[in-house]
Image (cartoon, rainbow, N blue to C red; front, side, top):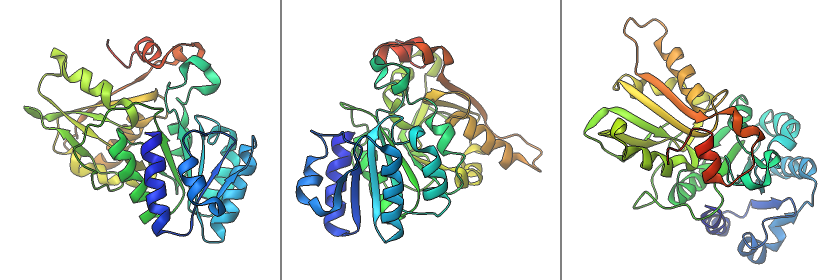
Length: 299
């Protein structure tokens, strides 16, 4: 996903002279293609993520679309006040790019576990969450974010994620992307972020025989109401996310259903969230081991 991000950023920056990249003294061996081609639009803010975000907000107020880039919680939780007050409040085109969402850096411990970030960003009213499920969804998210500039959070995996689409999809905020059409289309596995591979594994289990698989790369506070059109067609939705249950994607969809059901006599689809158990918060291990320990993966 990291490579797809930087490759697409370079392509977009060739067409859009206002795209800039600011890093927090990391990303080297990944960000060089942008830094080498656009040195005047590349800044290293050093190990100073809060200043990085304030700088990005200032540049955005002058017409730039700024991408801030760092690992997991560093450009997000460490900069929560600046993102809330400087970026989201003023509706500025700053995209916070977090590499290693979920437990991708699980071997480095809790400081690198990005498992509460959805809870932070989905409470910001102007924030667009972009959580691609594969490298082609990364490219699609990048195109959407540049075409629709504003406060946004791009949550990437680390490296080596497989592609599940045959081409770059077209995206809309809150729209489900069909990945696999099952024999029981009224039952859907709905994944956001890099849990697509885990969803694929679950489809091989007897309990999920015939389920369809969809992805939700783009979602936000403003996209809740538009979930009605999908939820009214289904009997069951199982959500998958490498995030804690509280404040996560499954909780967001449950809130969306509750909002859409107001005044209705017949209930919408049942929603069953599958997320990480909070026990992983104190654990150290590889991503695969911690996903299994946290109850997200099943093998």
